[in-house]
Image (cartoon, rainbow, N blue to C red; front, side):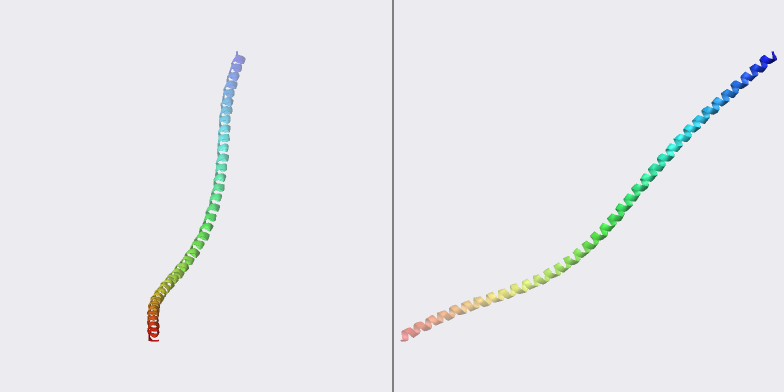
Length: 137
């Protein structure tokens, strides 16, 4: 009987230990699964971080390039504005010269009209003089 009790107690102890071992194995598997998920999340996060950093670098390069283009365009614009001011100045001078030339042309037109009148008057006087000379001869 003592052997049966000892055997029973040993089997019961063995079952309890087996139960503890099964629980530990299950807990171990859950922890391994959690570690695997965390590792995957860390790797995924690192990948996203690297992609974000690469995208940030590309954007910074684009910003640098755009700043250079802006500086170049600004310099060209300033040069064009300087040329435009020079052209406006030249246009003003040309306008003044044109006004002066127009005034001189008007003065010359007036003189031409006077000369033409004088010429007609002289021709008329010449005609009269010729007529008087012809009548006197």
